Image (tube, rainbow, N blue to C red; front, side, top):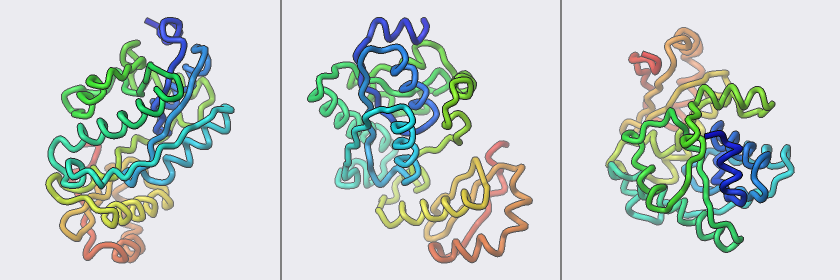
Length: 249
């Protein structure tokens, strides 16, 4: 099935828009093929600020109304206590909020950007999407992450080469309480590495220390910039560690 066929079957859709590669291409396709489209962005402390900036930029470039829903995600103990299935509760909360807003706006079909490369068994949040009857047209049409980047580039979308970025809560070990302060530290540290030109990395919280996980091709760069990175990170952490098991190995 092609995306154009999907939108012929579902001409009026709400799109859960994160500002990332997949949901951006999904939204672009919906704007080109569906008869009526509305986009919803859920703003929580789990999303870095640049994601909302990118979502707003996309909305402006495509003359699209973007509805922003603000959630106090940490008020839910099932999420803030950070259990193994935190992602399930988080997705359920976020997509329930979108479903309610979309329904009030007259949209009964909600879409998300899950693609054919996403491993169902590795994503507990997918169970929540199933329970809420959220549709994933990219997955249904067999489009992989590689396909989506290629098609996005051809379409001229600025998101085509945006790095994959999971929510900030994934930097905190399961079972450790999630606080806004921990998330803010993580965002500041990762923004600093982004400003230095790093890609495909994570800054994990280990006790009160930062553990940097980075692509093997950038380890030499990080070592050469070690002093300035440590100096910056010591503003937020007691110590700074480098994971020698590189992210691409």
